[in-house]
Image (tube, rainbow, N blue to C red; front, top):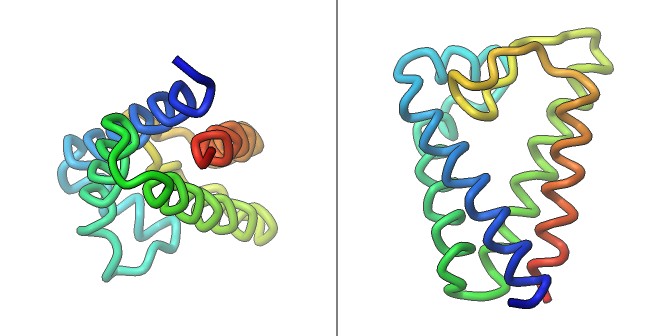
Length: 124
Protein backbone atom coordinates (compact mmCIF):
# COMPACT_ATOMS: atom_id res chain seq x y z
CA UNK A 1 0.00 0.00 0.00
CA UNK A 2 1.43 3.38 -0.97
CA UNK A 3 1.67 6.49 1.23
CA UNK A 4 -1.21 8.44 -0.41
CA UNK A 5 -3.54 5.46 0.10
CA UNK A 6 -2.53 5.15 3.76
CA UNK A 7 -3.03 8.91 4.24
CA UNK A 8 -6.44 8.69 2.57
CA UNK A 9 -7.48 5.79 4.82
CA UNK A 10 -6.35 7.54 8.01
CA UNK A 11 -8.03 10.80 7.04
CA UNK A 12 -11.18 8.94 6.01
CA UNK A 13 -11.41 7.17 9.35
CA UNK A 14 -10.94 10.50 11.18
CA UNK A 15 -13.76 12.08 9.16
CA UNK A 16 -16.14 9.13 9.63
CA UNK A 17 -15.46 9.08 13.38
CA UNK A 18 -15.88 12.88 13.60
CA UNK A 19 -19.20 12.80 11.76
CA UNK A 20 -20.49 9.76 13.61
CA UNK A 21 -19.58 11.14 17.02
CA UNK A 22 -21.38 14.40 16.22
CA UNK A 23 -24.53 12.45 15.40
CA UNK A 24 -24.10 10.29 18.51
CA UNK A 25 -23.84 13.45 20.66
CA UNK A 26 -27.47 14.20 19.84
CA UNK A 27 -28.59 17.69 20.81
CA UNK A 28 -25.28 18.54 22.52
CA UNK A 29 -23.27 18.83 19.30
CA UNK A 30 -25.45 21.53 17.66
CA UNK A 31 -25.19 23.60 20.86
CA UNK A 32 -21.38 23.27 20.84
CA UNK A 33 -21.26 24.05 17.12
CA UNK A 34 -23.26 27.26 17.66
CA UNK A 35 -20.89 28.22 20.50
CA UNK A 36 -18.01 27.78 18.06
CA UNK A 37 -19.74 30.10 15.60
CA UNK A 38 -20.72 27.52 12.99
CA UNK A 39 -23.40 28.82 10.61
CA UNK A 40 -26.84 27.45 11.54
CA UNK A 41 -27.41 26.25 7.99
CA UNK A 42 -24.28 24.08 8.10
CA UNK A 43 -24.81 22.47 11.51
CA UNK A 44 -27.33 19.73 10.55
CA UNK A 45 -25.47 18.78 7.36
CA UNK A 46 -21.86 18.79 8.56
CA UNK A 47 -21.79 15.36 10.27
CA UNK A 48 -23.27 13.73 7.15
CA UNK A 49 -20.83 15.54 4.87
CA UNK A 50 -17.93 14.34 7.03
CA UNK A 51 -19.21 10.75 6.91
CA UNK A 52 -19.66 10.79 3.13
CA UNK A 53 -16.26 12.42 2.50
CA UNK A 54 -14.62 10.02 4.96
CA UNK A 55 -16.21 6.98 3.35
CA UNK A 56 -15.11 8.16 -0.10
CA UNK A 57 -11.55 8.56 1.20
CA UNK A 58 -11.61 5.07 2.71
CA UNK A 59 -12.93 3.31 -0.40
CA UNK A 60 -10.82 5.47 -2.73
CA UNK A 61 -13.76 6.75 -4.81
CA UNK A 62 -13.60 9.98 -6.79
CA UNK A 63 -9.92 10.73 -6.21
CA UNK A 64 -8.77 13.49 -5.63
CA UNK A 65 -12.10 15.25 -4.95
CA UNK A 66 -12.71 13.84 -1.42
CA UNK A 67 -9.19 14.82 -0.34
CA UNK A 68 -9.75 18.34 -1.70
CA UNK A 69 -13.07 18.63 0.14
CA UNK A 70 -11.48 17.33 3.34
CA UNK A 71 -8.63 19.82 2.99
CA UNK A 72 -11.10 22.66 2.43
CA UNK A 73 -13.12 21.69 5.49
CA UNK A 74 -9.99 21.41 7.62
CA UNK A 75 -8.77 24.82 6.47
CA UNK A 76 -12.17 26.32 7.37
CA UNK A 77 -12.22 24.57 10.77
CA UNK A 78 -8.67 25.73 11.49
CA UNK A 79 -9.41 29.32 10.47
CA UNK A 80 -12.40 29.31 12.82
CA UNK A 81 -10.28 28.04 15.71
CA UNK A 82 -7.54 30.61 15.02
CA UNK A 83 -10.12 33.41 14.92
CA UNK A 84 -11.72 32.35 18.20
CA UNK A 85 -8.33 32.08 19.91
CA UNK A 86 -7.39 35.55 18.64
CA UNK A 87 -10.61 36.87 20.17
CA UNK A 88 -9.70 35.21 23.47
CA UNK A 89 -12.59 32.75 23.21
CA UNK A 90 -12.10 29.09 24.08
CA UNK A 91 -15.44 27.29 23.66
CA UNK A 92 -15.59 23.52 23.85
CA UNK A 93 -14.37 21.81 20.72
CA UNK A 94 -17.22 20.13 18.91
CA UNK A 95 -14.85 18.39 16.50
CA UNK A 96 -15.53 14.84 17.64
CA UNK A 97 -18.91 15.25 19.32
CA UNK A 98 -19.00 14.08 22.93
CA UNK A 99 -15.38 12.92 22.70
CA UNK A 100 -14.08 16.47 22.43
CA UNK A 101 -15.65 18.66 25.07
CA UNK A 102 -12.29 20.22 25.95
CA UNK A 103 -11.84 23.96 25.21
CA UNK A 104 -10.12 24.76 21.91
CA UNK A 105 -6.41 25.46 22.01
CA UNK A 106 -3.08 24.89 20.33
CA UNK A 107 -3.54 21.12 20.42
CA UNK A 108 -6.54 21.47 18.10
CA UNK A 109 -4.42 23.48 15.69
CA UNK A 110 -1.69 20.82 15.76
CA UNK A 111 -4.21 18.04 15.16
CA UNK A 112 -5.76 19.91 12.25
CA UNK A 113 -2.29 20.56 10.84
CA UNK A 114 -1.58 16.82 10.89
CA UNK A 115 -4.94 16.08 9.25
CA UNK A 116 -4.27 18.72 6.59
CA UNK A 117 -0.90 17.08 5.88
CA UNK A 118 -2.70 13.75 5.42
CA UNK A 119 -5.14 15.45 3.02
CA UNK A 120 -2.29 16.88 0.96
CA UNK A 121 -0.56 13.47 0.81
CA UNK A 122 -3.89 11.83 -0.12
CA UNK A 123 -4.17 14.12 -3.15
CA UNK A 124 -1.43 12.21 -4.96
